[in-house]
Length: 220
Image (cartoon, rainbow, N blue to C red; front, side, top):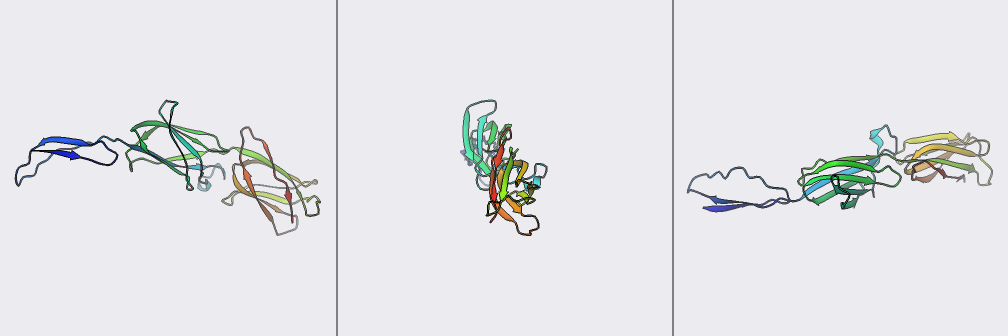
């Protein structure tokens, strides 16, 4: 007669007592159900900052804060930041149901409720898509002699190369592009009649409510 111990990572150990083994005979100890002792919640975070209606160009969000709390509770259980792939993992949670909060600069906070923590390797990754706040980008374009540039095309492109808006400078060299979402973008200025553009980096951190962001451009 034997005691059989069953162990598995992230599960409570179970012992089966008084298992009789007869010579040259197969002994069926029956079904063993292990209780999970550690569970996980994993997932990734993206932004709709490129174009809100196109899911194919949603950039990953590095450095977003992801928090977990027991479902319906306000006490923080754990917090992590997303990596350069926008991924996150809570690998040592107690089994149970949790509320997940995702926070990123320039985005609306996202709450996902009643998420079940599953045994390691068995969890379904969460796909968190944050709504980007926007700003109205306005500025003035001058040349290297400080003269205003009239009729120049001003375009803002997302980091993925998607056009976020385009306009032309007025008689004062001014332009305005409204509703530009959070993100690391490029602002491109092409003078009238020219085929050569001048590009500069433009980092937008959207606000709620929307505010103006100034981006003056001096052409070389």
